[in-house]
Length: 123
Image 1 (cartoon, rainbow, N blue to C red):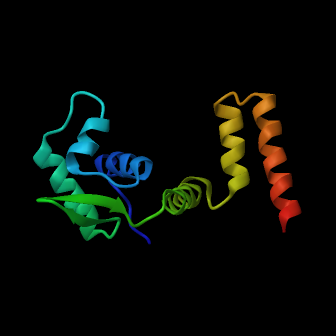
Image 2 (tube, rainbow, N blue to C red):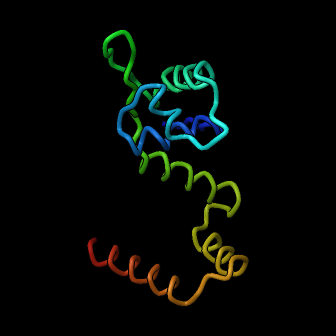
């Protein structure tokens, strides 16, 4: 998987990842106001199908859509592209940036360090 989603596509994928499967109307119901038109959502969902992010099954006269790509896989790919593109491939540079620019507090840093140490002990 090496495809990027547009902002709208990602918004609809977030809904599908949460619901696990949904009709176009189910997706619309989960979106904030102002709600997009039914045809707009339907078109974007079909685009997501052509990108192999979504598939469908028939239910009555309509379709139920479900994600083919796991949220964790897409998140990992997107994060790696961010790190490569903006931080020269260095997670250390990315973390330093967020610590310096976003006033990360000491408790958050300790939680991050604990997670890193837990991951190291798993290996």
